Image (cartoon, rainbow, N blue to C red; front, top):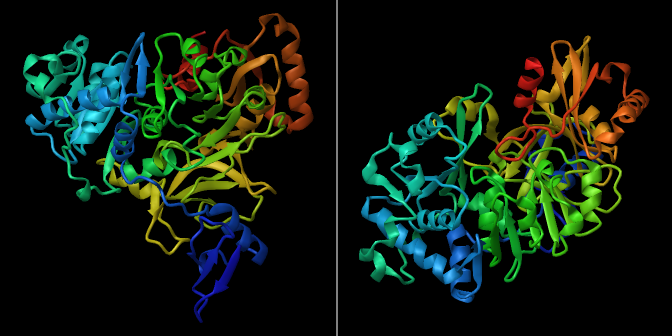
Length: 544
């Protein structure tokens, strides 16, 4: 890294990494002066990624590029049916024209209330062709009351759905509710097939929103996060986020459409020319045929790696990954351990794991992004100390819709770079290791007080999941004591495994970290997004 002071008042420093892709950036010196000179250099070197020219400014440009280059390539397969890039483009064009007739214009919000299917893809592409914004939800698992709440909060102008959900959506204007499996099939639309350009590309803006994803707030009220085309293109179409996907690459689509990682599957595949394998109920049947799997660790534990002979790349995120799981897959393929909340666009750090690792990092910031490890006053901590991870760069989303109080709490001007950007408080704890990679220490919310001592719950869970007999585990605080919930790969080990786990926890952690109780469950309950459902586990425990 080269750097130089470029003004007399040493207000900021200019730096450039020795990297073909890097451009100079300006770092405010007064914001890092509390660090030693060595740590100042490492704060910049570790935390600020190289600058790349992202190949697309809009995800629909990426898709349409492949429609032009490989029109007859298979875009997706589902239930023994397939659709080519040209066919998908044609079907989406018809649907887009229907939406246009209903008054949908650039920037309008459109509810995409569908189950996993080819209709889902047609709906996504149709909305994006109009440069509108889609809001995905699966009506099979989302209550009618929440669908209505999301629709109201988003001020949606139309709903795309399927015919079997008409009763669930009767709260919305029927005139602007379009059933994807029925309406475009009408004879009056048959002559509309063709590559019709609905929007002039010249007017495209990379900072315009692409979709809104809803996350559950701490109060239970859903929060809608507005994700832009720039956000998405940066992670989906630069390496390593593109996961090597190209023509002929088969990508498994196994996640819930309302989960941000599903956009990695869907738009990452279709924008890089791959073939999307949309699963049915059996996840493993789809995984066995795939070259690329994007998953949560919890879902990945349900897939037998030895049956996935076509696999080339796996990426996990959404929750901490057990070392044993990473080692199993990294011995077979390129395995990425990743991290990042919805507000920083799918993931903003990635690590290609080495086989037989003893500790997993979450890697470094992805291109055009930054990670700052700060204290609770937004001051940098010493390199190697644990702090709160703030994310900056192209990954930072526009914010929560209709929630300025939360925006002001979680989003902030980037106080380190002179570029007018924003940074986001991820709520995750982390530190830099000696390799300039981030070690994840769980959520701030997962730091609890037990007997007056601060305890990091993930530290306990990591030890438990290092046992080969353990499939998944989670540790929770109940009243003033700790409980670890564990699912085993082999229930016959139940008589000895708890004693072995206790022994290692006592050897490696302070005495107050030892859980008061260990509960063995056949499977840990999962959320609709494929993560361990801590809320459900609490309910099961209190009811038992």
